[in-house]
Length: 340
Image (cartoon, rainbow, N blue to C red; front, side, top):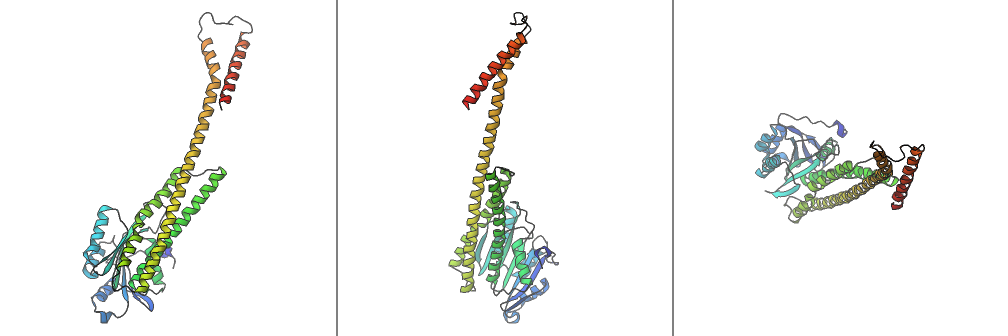
């Protein structure tokens, strides 16, 4: 199933999808009612595996169901209310009550290279259950959902988080590649003297990269802090994979920084080119003004219609005036081009 075929419908409690994942078998889907029963059962009845529930927070029943059945700490709901109230979401992963509380920013499913096409995914990762929630369809979590549906085996809750971070990294790498391709085309046209891009278009790309980096840059630091004192249910293998994913993510952020510098240099080059064109146009206008100055002065003097105008009665007066104007115009032209 392609990502374009992904469905965004929810059940009566806002559940987009729910899975029981096993370390040695493909995942099986379940409804919100079965998920509530699974969470109420004891460890012996549940057996091996863990639960992943993905909710749509735009549904009015989603937050109520989570409060009644998921057993999430109040910090999770505080994050939801705080992010909704302030409208600014900083990426972070924190250890609270033996579970990981994560706020992860991601691009929209229908991303169109606009700085506003970024929304937030909230996660609570515990030893037996992972809860994710969003308000807008996001690319990375939908890639993860399709991978689970197609039978990919995920052995632990932290492995699910690592998979999500790597999906997010792949999405960002795709964005960086497309922006890099666009910048390469602009540079080639700039070197060839065929400019078809404006500073506004480059500014939009730069704003997009700045916003992505500003929202995502705290993530590696928060992950490194977590890795210093991980919870007891995280094994060494998952910790190493999380560290590696963090390092790979840092490389992508550095690439984005380098791309911002390239865009900045291109903007400066375009500004210099525009200034050069303006100076050339101003020079041409100055030349035309200087060349037209003698004829305007003479025409103004001879057009006053007062007595004593020289050569008024001379039979060759017109041609004499023309020769004088031509001489002064030639002298002005020589002076102007000599200054250049």
